[in-house]
Image (cartoon, rainbow, N blue to C red; front, side, top):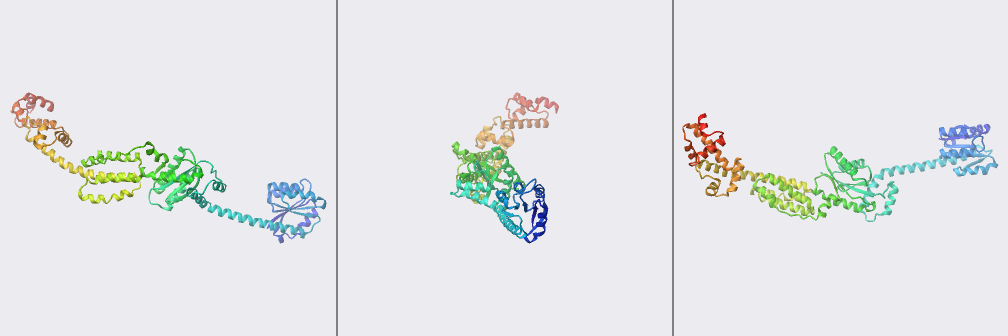
Length: 513
């Protein structure tokens, strides 16, 4: 039912129309009456009827003034004006407020009914139209996210999209697309999953304060944002990574384009793909910009490859030196930023050089793993792979070398014990005349295994034997000990060395015993 308010300053007309008109027959109900415009407007303000039937000439606030005031506050309310014949021109002014129904007094219930029916039909039509429009708006709002996604996809992939399309979508989305924008391309560091892509997209939309459009592109999530300060953008991107890693235990890599106009979105997208490609040189997860990818090229760096730099310490089993050499190799690859295929070829070449150092039984197995390196998506993964290889081969070579070195050192110690009374005993004598080795190399090997220089080891052993002789025979002569322990006919030098090593002279030591 539509609500009707009846207004007339003549009580007899007010009562007559109220009683004569069959309101329900026209889908209406009379909700109130008033005898002047002031009282009528109070009812309008309180209950907002759908239709007002009003006389024009009334004290205080006449019908035309009531129409004007109501139109300002309740423009949806429809009016039927009642007036005498001479007031037609006066009533005609109400037409500017949309008043279409004017009835001359005296009137009857049929004419009022006709006016009510026309207004009710008009209201129903308007309601149907409004319902249809609202339904279309609801449907549009439901599909709008998909429309936005498709628009972004078209702008970054379709050559024909330009300024004209930009203006049209700007009106649709109520965005200021004339301002500089940036593209962010997200890649999950793990198995691709649509639900995870959707999660990254939602987190990015929530945490990026100036998101305009977003969509998924293959295995990536693409987000268009208004340009903002680098500091703010970096902070928001780190928040996205942290939130995603906290909830899904997975990292994400983000490629960031330079600022540009929306009409250049296709170029910006190609730039972000190129930028993302250089995640190969970085740790998995993090943000990469154009500056990161251009760094090496701008400096014109040349990569110098020397496979022996890493092979030498691995061959000798020196793990610490091998780790340093591998770190330098990876650092140089990062610095040079060659093409990814060329970088992989150098890494594979280094790996092949390493596995030549391994035992024959493992060589075939290691060769079969070359294909794994070719498929690796980051330099970090290749570094980990090489590190494991270096560790295994270095350890194996160290163990083999240690066995070999221990045998040599044991032989040196045997010679020292046999030749302890030889005054000519020296490192050169043992190396050149007995073991046929380089004296410097033998001296370094001896110190590494025993912790003592050759000469110190011999002198300490002679002093130890001296104390053993004195304990065994307190009457032993000092000059006899000097001769037995390789000091020849120089007992004075023997005594000086003994005091330096033991803390007292041989005579004092014998008295203590």
